[in-house]
Image (cartoon, rainbow, N blue to C red; front, side):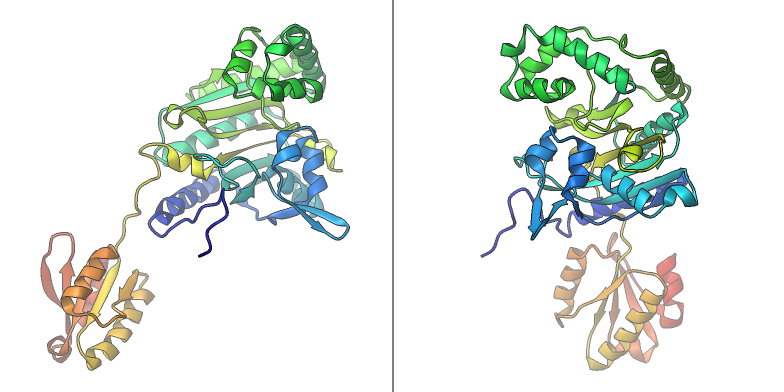
Length: 412
């Protein structure tokens, strides 16, 4: 018997209502903020991610699913931003309307050790706003993420923000870290010793407890920010305060991708244990230019859907159903029942029928298993009276309804 590949997951019918809720709510909130959906391929040239994410990042070095096709090297997308910016430029969106607000929902792929809430195929709900450097856009991105969580029924989360500044600020921060950590390299984990050689900022992103304590003891502040970046970050904080969005400034917060600059943020939840992040994002003002486009600001975020579903009392609830289940007794009733089923569906009401020709008792049991709100029973007696028996599954009551009035009764 074949089994699924480790690090992947079957999303079963009992689980899909929570996914549908997340996707439907996300689309509704995105529309309120005037974001439009974009769908990019799950496969891209590997060099796109090598260039945008950073050749020294763990994603590029260890986690990309690579596909060799003769002389070409492709990769299953490990994240969404690089693909969105590639599409933005390739399709000349900056020429049709420079400022674009886009969102996406779909699978991503990383070859990493499978663990709770961290899979090799996982799903992101994300947004990208391309074409502005205004601090108000950073505020909108974070407020959009917060609003989405509220509508997902998620509370008790924490928003942490920081600013990495411009490229010169990032270099200044890197130099400061090299100096501060120079005498403590032996205390860092093996991965962080490698990170210190390739991109020392990534030491700040280490999840190892001893490395986190070393970084905490450094007492980092915002002194590396230039006046413009300092004012930009102050504007972000003012904007969040004006909207009443709680946040915590964390000078140790960085993102594990090289394209981030200025504002970065992460949303975590204590209910998830040590792997507590449910979403993150920030600014990437140089990425469009890096991929051959004009100089322009951009910001975005993404939620991991699997991570959201692990939060207690969040999306793990079934959608309210008003499924109608039709049971027919006899050949003539069956023929008439198929027509009635079609009428119900054409009226926009979810409906199904017993296709196994079970007894009435067995069919009622199947209807209950399917989560039906109502069961319609059609037999020879009902046909003669041009009526149908309608059973309310919530309270067990039953009444006879004329077929001409059936749709109106079901919509009440």
